[in-house]
Image 1 (cartoon, one colour):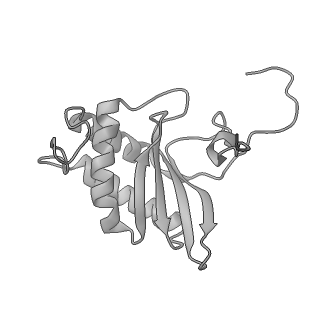
Image 2 (tube, rainbow, N blue to C red):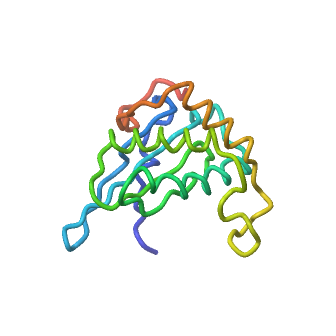
Length: 165
């Protein structure tokens, strides 16, 4: 069995971050010197709220469609299993401020979206019946009203704790 590698997100102190936010979660460099940035696009406060599966699925389709129009280099946007936000991977170094602005613009696109959701058919989507456009729009509006900010990474303390809170 391979040695386990603890993902960065498992070292994030989910009790101390304050959603909604954009956080630079990591930078990788390829063997050819290209940079790849990974972002935590958090909409809901961890362990206090979660986005319904239908709403997060619709958000995924709309973010994947519209974020690329606001930010060059987007490789992927994927929902977190905890349903509190998304991970976005970008080629190059767009930087947190640019990502924050692009995410705000994209959430505005989602909040005001009218019409059929892109990629929602049996041919294009693996679970095309599980969508909630109204829920997606409500989450986008909620986040815009609360205001996004840049969140620094807060790692879990390795100091012994008096009690487990």
